[in-house]
Length: 177
Image (cartoon, rainbow, N blue to C red; front, side, top):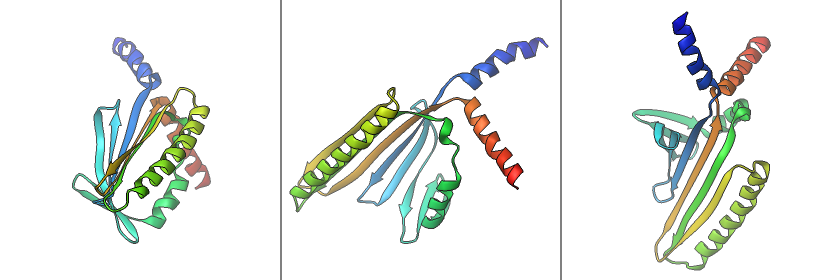
């Protein structure tokens, strides 16, 4: 009984205190790879790997495990997986590196379009959630071919919300068959 009374406050704190998780994406245009990492509190890496793109499917490499995903299944699966209603976005960062060896005007036009799009999307998200940090930036390179996109998304949740969302999905499956 004393052990239960000792452990119970820690369990309650774990269920109620927020957890900050982040997804970092980095697309390298030269290698045509999307690198990704999932982190807790910005530093503790949970998973990571990279994705290569083919004509009909993407190949994801996580450690030594290879997963092949047809594009059609990736977008259909996204519609079915909706437990993110209990998660709050705390920070979004988008950074584009662009440059061209032959055409000096194209990177400037693309940078302007990206900056404008980031401003519109990120300010709209910031209006929905005033506590969120949002940043979009562009680096333009002269005299060399560069295309890289760096995207960071940090979200906040607590385990009680995750448990309730998963149990809701489980109950829906049990009721609907």
